[in-house]
Amino acid sequence: MTMTKHKTTATAGHTAGGPAAPAKLPKMSILGYGAGDAANNLAFTTATMFLLLYYTDVAGISAAAAGTLLLVVRIFDAFADVLAGRVVDRTYHKKLGKFRPFIMFGSVPLLLLSVAAFSIPQIGQSGMLLWAYVSYALLGLAYSFVNIPYGSLAGAMTQVAGERAKLASARTIGAVAVGSFLGIFIAPLMKGGANLQPLFTTLTIVFAVVGTGLYLFTVFTTRERVVREVAKASLKQSLATLKGNKPLLLLCISSFLFLTGQLAVGSVQIYYFRDVLHSLPLYAVMSIINIFLTFGLAAILPKLVGAFGKKRIYLAASLLMALGGVVVFFAPANMVWLAFTGVMICQLGITLVNMLVWALEADTVEFGEWRTGIRTEGITYALFSFTRKTGQAVGGALAAYALAWGGYTAGGGAQTEHALLGIRAGAGLLPLVFAVLALVVMLAYPLTDAKHKEIVADITARRADRLEASRREEAEAAGQRAAQGPDATPAQPEHPSN
Image 1: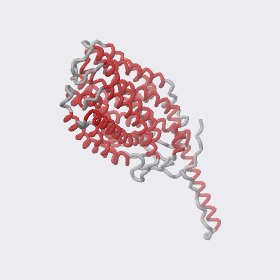
Image 2: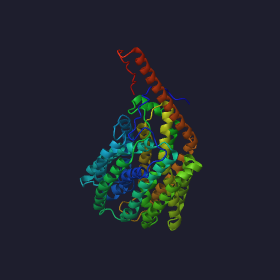
Image 3: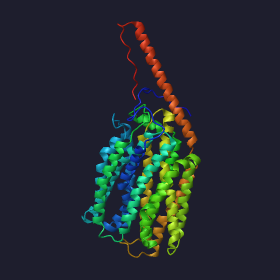
Image 4: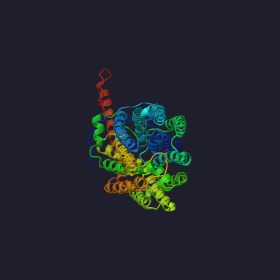
């Protein structure tokens, strides 16, 4: 495959942090990047874990109506991601680069909208449903304009596979830290519905303050170090990097399927512990184990990537999620230890994929650059996020519809056998089916780590050749001006537009 020729200013090393990406990132940058996803998940994971429960048990919205709401709004969010990606690709700040300005100025609106989403006033059923739609849609829009730049930032910080694995691990640790806090300290409080509104209001306000600090820490500790020859990509250039990018297409499809299963689990897991196993405190135990699991995987992930490659680990993780789904769906309610084992097997697969997928996405940016000569992290990440958001939409909706199909009764009381079957389907059957489908698609993924390394070397060599050619042209022009004498009119250098 050959690279399409594009005229660019070869001397324009458009980076906020310098002309070249170092082999190793500073530890503070890795920590700062992880803090950004902790801040993201103060809004995202809170919504993923509790918004369906909030709608059904606190706001009094039916499970079917809540499922439709989640489907419609999250699909809207997916299109918002594409818009955000396009805006990011057309933006560049000399000091802060392409991505950090969005994180800096978008964080406060995002976190305040999270407060609004969990603060539905008692204004009648129609008014409450309208508030839920509008507040969640605005929350999703604000999240797109923060998360798309945040996710794109990793690809601009380094091109080294091991360092990208560290960034992927750092953001996963940040996300899991928030999710574990919610699971350990907040989930056990979800026993009743009517008295939960003050809890959600206080929680989201505190998160708004903490999240702002975390976002600012990300902004001031990270830098964009990968050389950028075109600072502001045109729409034609952005679309060209996507056309024919088979690795990105397959990764998007697989992620859509995997996220569908993952969001189904995340949406109904609290119902599974509370209503099926009658062991809500185990949700906190799961969260504690998940902390150690995540830190342990983060420590060994770069070595695993070096030994097996990202694709093989992704396939194995998908298989673990499917296996866990089988156990969760079929385990008898009185065999709590077996059901809990299934939950943790499923969680192991989810954690591994969530660590790897961001490094895989960053690799597809280089594939697009290799083909076209243009780096477009924004639109590439936006397309990837679009498919993930649609997966989240479908997964969350299917979980809610599973509750509605089973005849779930709001309020955490005794449920019928059919209602319990609906919860089991959401917590076990859905992740089983979609993990297998994600695995099948990923089998065709062509961008191995070895191939990516060759692509990065080729991009670097081409960039060096263009830079050397530009220098020779400038030297020849200077020699011609000297030969013509001091009174000659200087020739104007050609600066093709980006």
